Length: 65
Image (cartoon, rainbow, N blue to C red):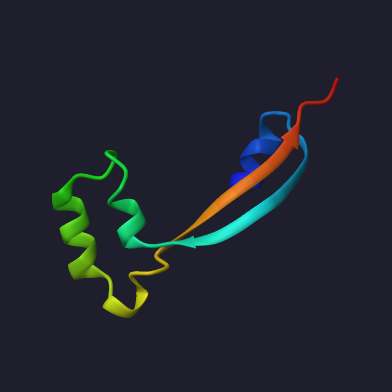
């Protein structure tokens, strides 16, 4: 979906340079996520998935011209 959105605004040669799992512990290091949200996620997602609940992506792309 992210690649499609980048293409929709004119980017080309879109490629995934890196993809790695991002766990709950890593989310806790960012002030974007309040403790209440992290507590909710801990309860809502099974413990065996806490190490990889999302993927962190690094994309490369360029604007033509």
